[in-house]
Image (cartoon, rainbow over all chains, first blue to last red):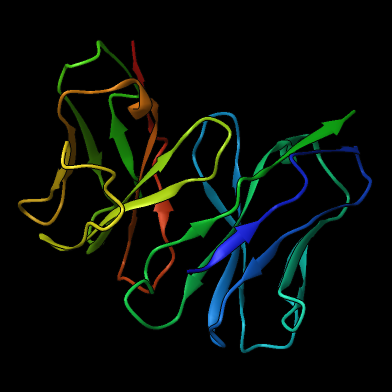
Length: 117
Length: 113
């Protein structure tokens, strides 16, 4: 079974600065998806960014980018120019590309990000 | 268009009561998922529907949990004889198809006293 580990329960960043959230995962599969989700206090989970494991290029979405290290099974999220609206719980998630569980997401425990004005 | 909606947003139940949690997916989404999120944890998969067919219920923690989606749209998660350990946020997500992006609802926070 796949596992996702987020080792930072809480992080803080000054507004306009850059912060990196860490995620590691364990899998025996070669093809899969990795995601970062944001969950603000209202609890609606929102997809931030997605990475396909077969792509070597790191995904980017505006101020959000990832550092995907497949061999190390590491998938960190970098938030540049942090804004107050970035404050939320951030979850790293894994999804298989094939097999019986290829639709369900496996989440880490999350990292609570605070943005300091 | 409208996103995934869930009702009620909050539910308090006394231990032993039955509860029903509703999920309205995005119109046209054939795949529907239920996740359970305990306090301080990430969501955990409960069950998956493709249209009206429940294709995977491997994550349901006990036979007190039951989910249905009779017409392939609205889904209901029912918990019988609630226990304190059932206290959690129950999240529903839908997607256009099983391999596509999952869109989440706001969740129902269940507190069992």
